[in-house]
Length: 431
Image (tube, rainbow, N blue to C red; front, top):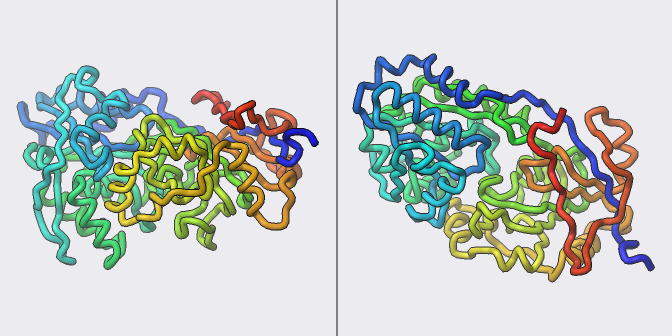
């Protein structure tokens, strides 16, 4: 029997997505902020706290530097506040390391990074929820809420992940994240977001927001400066845009999804549930999901996640190397703070990738392994180029937005049983 006879053959394909993008990122930030005419609100020598989150946002260092430069031009004294709830192990040092890992450093920006887990309770919502707010941001004269707008991996509403979540979880730090995620057991996410957001906008000196939307190629597609009074209305509309532009798997049904890497820089849950189809149930697709993956195998953690494997519990299989790379304390803190303990549970650990694929294919029903519907992706941000099994070949001929790059070839295991990763195309090479 040939070595790979009991595995499906794989075809490399490319997807074509909406390719709108911002080519001059600093210039667009400048134009957007100039349009708000903040000179009438921000006086010389006033301090301005600018948020930077933990997600791997494209061009985040350039975007942040352009925001800093705008307030320098107004004569203000900007500084950076890491705004990421409990990420970075729930420590000031860990959160500072995360933003510096994205190139957001004091040397590059020319301003101070003030990282602290200390919060001030600035209000109580009508539901009785204390509103926590980063002390450094609270003591600033003004606050700029900058963040990416996109569908959340667990919460559902008119607004999900974006400016409001940055005010709620990001600037609420570990203390705020804990209480808000606990409150979600008793109140709906929209109720909490609106109540906390309203309190922050009234009491915490928010001068504007900078909303970022990315395209399906993980590129900056839209930047919009938003006045405080328009946060809710604009975020509702921007979420619709973000949902339409987000990356997707090309096929709804999948027996096995192989993910080369997951991490907090990819998604809040390591792997984006909007892409893999487990937003409402960790281990099964529901009628509300766009994708149905019977099994998920995760091959590694990103270096930028620093061992935080939140979301690993949504996969059924991992290899030994991934299991050994998990920082269990950091992962547990993040999962417990988020009220999502199953996200930190450990899947079946296989010695090699070959073993993981073989075991997974034994659990997908009556289909024989060579005929299984298998997809392999780099991560849930980068799905423009991927590998799909021969079972999808008839559908490939039906879809105009799919390009076949190679003929079917055996799965590329090396002598040690490791599977070759999907080498994603460089940004901008989508035509």
